[in-house]
Length: 77
Image (cartoon, rainbow, N blue to C red; front, top):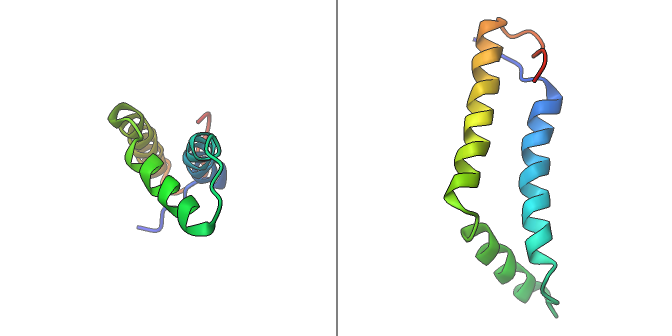
């Protein structure tokens, strides 16, 4: 089945994750690239389970709407 998610919803998902990580990573002053990588990995591991579940529920909901709409644009999401 060729189901295209509306670009906004996909971007919204990645924007949230990127913004969440960026907010937490830049609390620290990493002096080099290796230190920055370490902080990013640590902060990704610290994302609360509830947040990941909500993000995945939202994404699953978008996929369900896509299937119901037979691959057409998602409305009101």
